[in-house]
Image 1 (cartoon, rainbow, N blue to C red):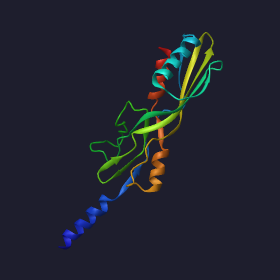
Image 2: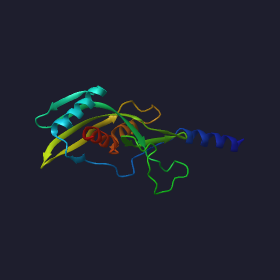
Image 3: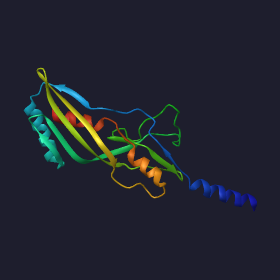
Image 4: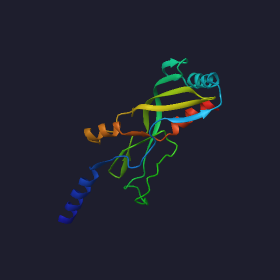
Length: 181
C-alpha cells in the first residue's frame, strides 16, 4: 500500500513539472546580403511582385533610397533537439524542422514538447549601389509568438518563450533569392 501511494505521488508530481529549455545553438544574426549585377529597377520589380503576390503589409516603401519595410508577416518556428529527445548526443543541436524561419526555446513537461510553431516578424530590404553591382540586404526584426503559449506553463516561462526567437537565416535567404532571380 505504501509503495503504491509513493508511486502515485511521484508519478503525479513528475507529470505536473514543466521545464523551459532556452536555445542552445548559435544562429543567424544580422542581415543576409548578396551582390547582384541586376539593375535596381529589376530588383525593385521582383520585390514589388513578391509583396503583391503574397499580400504583404507594406509599412515603408522608398524606392529612391532603396528601402522597403514590411509589417507583421507569418513565419514558421521550430525547436532544437534537446536533452529530453531520445537518442540525442550532447553535441547534437539540430533543428526539428531545418527549413523553419526561426528557432525558439521550448517547454518540456508531462512527456511532451511545447513551443509555438507560428510566429510573426517584421522585415526590411535595402537595395543600394555597390560599384557596378547592387547590394541586397534583408533583415528580420521584432519577432514574437503568434499564439499564446499553453496555460500549463508558468507565466514567467510563457514570457521567456515569447521573447526567445532567433532567425535561422532561411527566410532572409528566401527573400534575397526571390528578388535577385
